[in-house]
Image 1 (cartoon, rainbow, N blue to C red):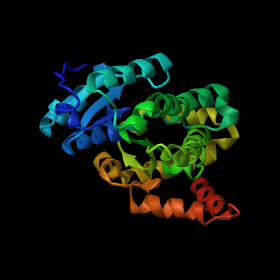
Image 2 (image 1 turned 180 degrees about the horizontal axis):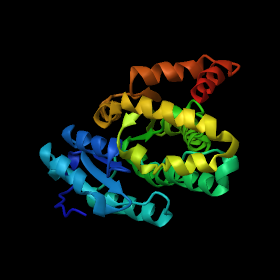
Image 3 (image 1 turned 90 degrees about the horizontal axis):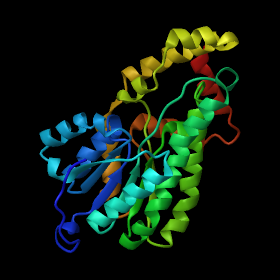
Length: 292
């Protein structure tokens, strides 16, 4: 945790404050550095602050180390969420934006992996987002702030062997789409950011043991093998974390945010398939093709 000297909000506190979750790597790390480069005091949170070295090094290289403050935050722990938000507000005099970025992937199908994976994936990707948003909203009302949540194109289109992950991201999208008009009546803007494949440590963090997965897949093994091969190819042509983070910073600084933001042309085309697919057949044809 960094030690910062804070003046009154009327002086140095005129720098807006954003809290970003999941900043030890990937999109979160890139967004934290970019937000600081855009002039925001960036509270960069992560569950394990021992993993903050990469962020600190990137911030120092970008010349914004003084604007990046590392704090511990476990989005699955209500006490951790409440204490972190309270600390930020006490130190900074308020809060201007939250970027819900922390997340975890999970690959498998329900018959094979059971309920534990569903529940743990939902805790991180959905309930953690709801918990932090709830804690931040009173302070965002006071500042006329905004909530930006990194979901996924998997929050719009269900993807094979990602039932738990996509269910959580669908839930986040539904929650935020429902919250947005309500929050707007109090001056708070809400948006979701939908990346496609991103070349980051997120894939590594899923901890895929492919041989073990295939050995346990039973009748689903041929389809799973085809899915994994196709997915690894898609990540070979993925966006960088910096490219995926850029629309987050644009949303932070725009006068008015759109509700739904894709991070690439590919993501826009992919999501458009769902939005135009009234009976679901186009999506089923598309994702079914990944399994052959």
